[in-house]
Amino acid sequence: MNNLNFESYDAIVVGTGAAGYNAACRIRQDGRKTVAIVTEAINAGTSRNTGSDKQTYYKLGLSGDFPDSVRKMANDLFSGGSMDGDNALCEAALSARCFMNLCELGVPFPVNRYGEYVGYKTDHDPFERATSAGPLTSKFMTECLQKQAERLNVPVFDHLLAVEILKDETGVCGLLCINNLNGDFAVFRTANVILATGGPAGIYADSAYPLCHTGSTALALDAGAALQNMTEWQYGLASVNPRWNVSGTYMQVLPRFVSIDENNNEYEFLSDYFSDIYEALSMIFLKGYQWPFDSRKILNGSSVIDLLVYRECVLKGRRVYLDFTKNPFGLAEIEFKKLSPEAYAYLIKAEACFGTPVDRLRKMNAPAVELYKSKGLDITERYLQIALCAQHNNGGIAVDMWWQTSVPGLFAAGECAGTHGITRPGGSALNAGQAGSLRAAQYICSNTRVLPREKTFIKIAETALTKHGEVCIRCVSFTDNAQEKTAYAMRRMSDCGGAIRNENILKKAITETKADLDCLFTSVSVSDKKSLYKIYKLKDVLTVQYAVLCAMLDFSRTVKKTRGSALYYDANGTLRCGLEETFRFCLEEGETLLKIQEVRIENGECKIVWRNVRPIPENTDFFENVWRQYRENKNIY
Image 1 (cartoon, rainbow, N blue to C red):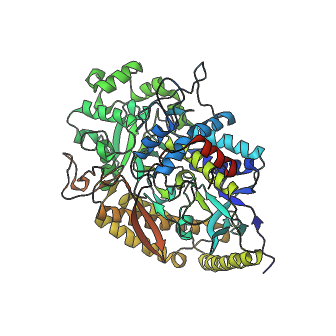
Image 2 (cartoon, rainbow, N blue to C red):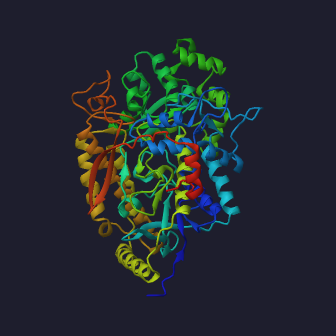
């Protein structure tokens, strides 16, 4: 039917987070291409709704006398393992430009009286490259970029959930969305789609991601793109409701760890493991510095705290809480000199060697108390429920040096792009999102893809609409079980495919997940048309879970050892004294640092390959040659 309604743009950005807004603004500012943003909810997303006690932005050193350089920063990013060198170099090279853009847009990054952007050391950072605008750095970034998009009159289509990337034989030609208010479909004709949809937050029940963010990574999988490094996540202790990282000062003030069983019996469970309560307190303190779960810190480090919380939650089925109202282990007063030298020195300098945990928190970081109050929970009076939660996906959609996927015209930027490796400096994700979205915008503005004729596009769109329309008719009934089935799938993933991984458990989870995915449109229903988006959200969850679980199983069979932020059970490995057999593992010693695992879904089955990383490009630039090429095509090719 030639009366099909659709919007046409040179590029469509999916997502209204910091990366999405930046991509749209950069295309609009260039002036050569038209662009619009599609989003399921303007005010949703991780970058707008998350943070920490001091959220970090990682950039090139811009203060002091540290001898920093683009190549040094690229090498430090690359050395985290399983990262492509061209992505590392781009993120380092564009770091200063992207950071200064944010400063000019109004993000309040602090300077000293001379104008230097003073930094501090973050994890996996050999220099003082880190900076922060406070607990809500990414929120400030998103808000400032949104204002810029509004000044530039970038069109934003709200309440549209992207459900399919339309393609012809040459690549992307459009985007199909469903309205999450009324269930109607919307069609866009475009040669380029930039996914800025964040990480696949919806696959886990135990999650530090905000409830309003679930991700849409299955869009790329269904379009034929590869994912990479999907075994590599960050997990850490976080509150369950509200969802927030309990890093930094939340740990350094030495709260009490309590678990409660089904009969409401209370256990201060760390005392069951540590014979020396001051060793336990010192490990709690270190969790502030060493917040993400790290397999290298299990046998002799603070990550044992993560495992003890996991043991209470998953193995024993109890609820775990932090109590800031009383000192741990029944201590009326803590003898701070008995702590580790590092913990004692820090608390002395902070003038916090007194009182209860909440007294110390008010002294060291009063906004951390107010943050929970603003979210409806007063930690000066009530326990704070926590779990070992997924916080960030270091993997994601595989992209090249222009953040383009293996599907021509499909780009990914922000957390949904898999440019990180095994470990990364804290805050580098915020820089990567800005650098990657700029690279994608530059490439789109400088290259023109030929779209199919309008008549051909209409036929492609009508075929997709017919397919989805038939599915939707089948899925609307008198019952609504989509939410229940989504919650069950998320719980299964946290229990079977979180930080602790076992081959037999993974195999069982894969079988169940694949069965749920195969019968999705016959077993799941919603009560009305306007709720149809829930089925598409569940489809995304199950599709990504299937890919991630298959990646984890392949890793356990091929690499067989533990690395990064996950523990793979190994019957021949080492077990920290006092822990259960399920925590036995063998640490990988760098054998796979130069390899990347890729996963695709072909004909409903996961296909996995391992490839070598792309090295950091050699520095052979001669100014006159670069300048000549720049005059011809801006060196965008």
